[in-house]
Length: 309
Length: 119
Image (cartoon, rainbow over all chains, first blue to last red; front, top):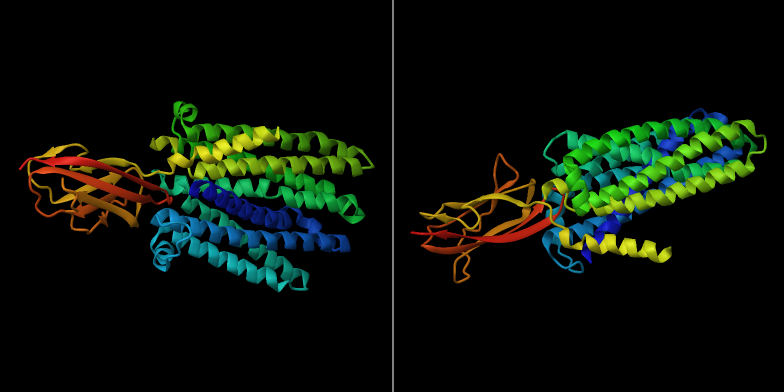
């Protein structure tokens, strides 16, 4: 029972950390100059994105506590329902996982404090979002210290590769839900509709860069944790990785379709409502596939790397 | 379609249940199943990953099942994958080593092996 619960806790926590970073990246980088538009519709979009950040933080906090509780049971060997202060203290203060969790919980608390401020001035709000964005990146990077990468024999390549992989996945995959929210709002808003093409172009450029980083860091991670084609095809870790690669391939194809087909039509058509709806459907489809990748990633996290077998 | 997705998820979730372990025994002194001429001062086990000392243990039992180690399990100062436990002077006989470790990436492994002291 512990392992399926650990998979769920990992998937939810990694997913919410990615969503947090993806949403902040979307607001700071993808919206870019469009942030200065200042229309009521735009302010409403920003309010929705901030709400998404808050809910991501709530989910990240709850899943972090759930994951920690499971790890205490896992490491100590005590039953899950048995509460031992000594075991909790030992995990929190005497293990690598506990030290990383201290940092993560501290960062989540800081982010909560920042998003609770909600300043009225635009410049102060932008500074606040930038601060939450930096915190979200630190939250992502720190996940590498509790992954297989932390135990890899070649350092700092293992940690660096995993951290980059997480960041690139977050900017792309974590940005899909905010993009879907933007496209939903853009269908009904003239001021946001005008920003659709530049926003899509920035998201496409970012996504393309992220795919490159994901492939490079993925190859590095696979070399460290799998080691050979034989291990890729004959171990459970290898099979899960193949399933992840196949789903990733479909995701890239969907992303490419969005970029080259729909966006090309968007530039030449005056009535864009249907195209925006179609684009939004594709983004939702990509999000579903991303959830499948996330589940596989969580399974990989509890499976012995092929190189160690 | 729904059934296929649910089945795949169940395979993935339950299929990983038997392999939660990550830090495997790499080598040990005395060696696994080995014979030593004189009583060793300690048992040393090197694992394939760095380990957490807080939840890691090595116990040594004699043939009657009595624990004979000095219960001072500690990590090597220069190698975080190497665990030591001291031993008193052992009489000739077969001894069983039982180990349980938590790797740095939080996964638990356990196992056991025997060694023989001839005099």
